[in-house]
Image 1 (cartoon, one colour):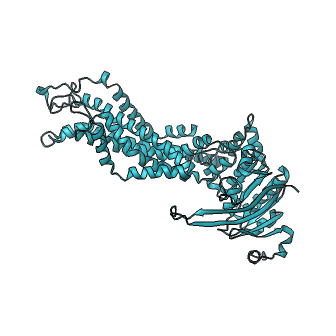
Image 2 (cartoon, one colour; image 1 turned 90 degrees about the vertical axis):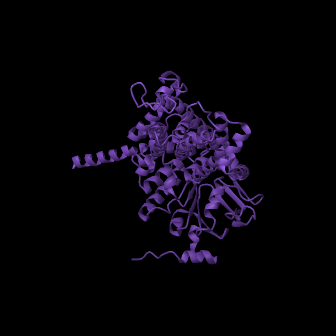
Image 3 (spheres, chains in turn blue, brown; image 1 turned 30 degrees about the vertical axis):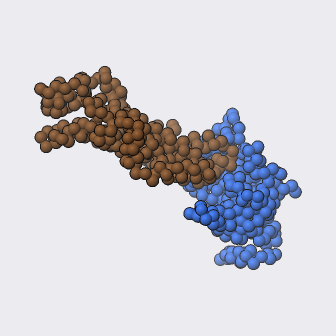
Length: 256
Length: 293
């Protein structure tokens, strides 16, 4: 299978707050390397502070790796260049749904924004209807503001907005973490169904192992800025790394 | 922005206040045509006249018509403070947005210049500027703008940075929206409320500032009418004729208060979550459900 995203030896450090002059830096990522094959769902799992969000920002081209420290390529081109050439072909759903949609936008405006940015004209309204149906929302939602919707509904809006431009690659940055459990399952099912339907590649970032193993074909364990284990979802029993073992052991057994 | 006007119009205070400020600005602009007397002509025989149909607000210690002086004074006070505010806010928005949006070395340079400017007390800076440039109305405006802009750049930059952290701006960047689109559609509408509040609040202090400089003899020169100056003239005869302080005092009070109310209303109208018509809409849905049941 062809690689869609290639992350090579990424290092990233941030300046410590208030240390502009002494130059004290905190190392967040220490040489992360992995590939994402086209059409797969790759899970990235790690505890808080392990560098998950920093990595997702780098892959989305929102941030640059440290100078000369690693590269990220999509289809053989540097990320930022690729995004510029293919607007709307990469998209993202964030954890914090409350700040994901501009509170001054109606849902119609929010969904039409990436459509217009990727150069789509014509019947955007019909497209929005189609998207809302796809993610299982009522059509009246179009003229509402986000404070009039529930968390699960907003996350559905974010998914509708993310898939509106038929992206090749979708980054789900803890997309279900702040939803309650019953809604999580619904959203997971929706994501799974959409992936098959639209032939998307997922990078699914989470700290919830159950959700990751449910959705993903390959799971990466990120620990202190390094990938410590790379597993296919069938091989969870063959974990070698100490941290990954601990994480697997921490899953609450589901028995009543 | 359609929603903004809808909510702004639904707010009664906003309408009253903007109507009042509109009248003040228009009457200031039209002062040469609508003022009943020349504001600088003396009529010593008719000094300290009571308010009457001939002199609506009475006359001052030199027999000048107070109503005409208020109208002409508004030209200086209100219009100049608005012009000053526009200039400061303009500089603040341009530099603050550039620094806050791009960060990095641009941010460092702009902020260090601001730090240098802010390390001078603004009153001293204004006095020095007026000393260098000479007295006069235009010089006061220039001096005030120079003293105030760094403060605005700082405030606006921090507002912009706070917005740049929002996920919807990250999403817009990822989906390939241009810088212009992000600034126009996301940052500016969000920031304009806070900037508007800053601006309207500070217009009040600029009005007082111009008046204070006029009192020191650095700004508006003697015969020209100006609210702060009228107040200061009235102060010297406060014991014998306190009523002379009322017209300019009330004028300053009302205009400053109106600007503050306007700031609040703009902020409320920009935020759909504070929508008053929305509550009404919900009520009606509730009623409909009751009827259906």
